[in-house]
Image (cartoon, rainbow, N blue to C red; front, side, top):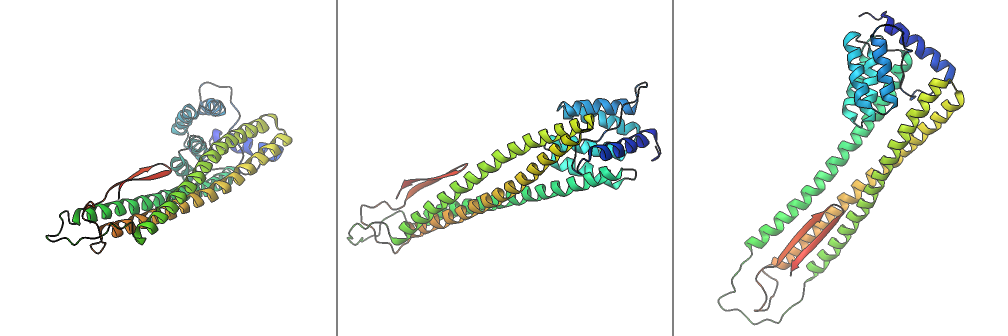
Length: 309
């Protein structure tokens, strides 16, 4: 269907009228055409999808939008499918549909600006998520390598006493053990602080989702009533969402930094203890065990070292 289809003309005219009357910002609520009183048509399917969207039934709304696009391949419909994916938290799919909508001819200027703004925000969020996953993965790999190295050192240590052992007085832990314990303590503290920031991120994400829902509701109400005051209220809510996004980004960076630092300190402490315990030059009494028995237990937000030294 060409760019002069009835649906496209109707969409463009409605969008221009609503933007001029309500003075909504670029990140406003879902854009939609006015319904047409006719037999089942793309316009009626679109309106039904809008009603599902307002009710928070995003999967059902997306199903209807897809049916509309099959009958009228309008980039405006792709934009609204992207909105559904964004509300469902499926940011990768939302980004894909926003990209498709701005890449086709016929998308109204206001919708294109909105889609580009949303794309910029989504790409930033996806980039932060990928970086956070990478940092966590590297920290866990360092801890795993430290545990493997300590166990390998324990396996290589001698388990039998020399043929002619020299009597030696029982000695306490060396400087390496005490230093290692200190580093492990700092590492556990760092992981704990990282867990606190991560918990703040989760709480702020929940609040951001609530504000985003309120933002959509206020925007839809502003469009329905053509009320500039409600449009300003929606704009203020949108500003709160953006400010909260900055706070979430800062907490994510701090959480990743403390997780990384805590993991490195923990690994260093384990390595020092292993070196001190299994060094052949460390004097031991005849009754001392030939190898230390210990275990590192990892859990979300906590680390515990158990064993006999």
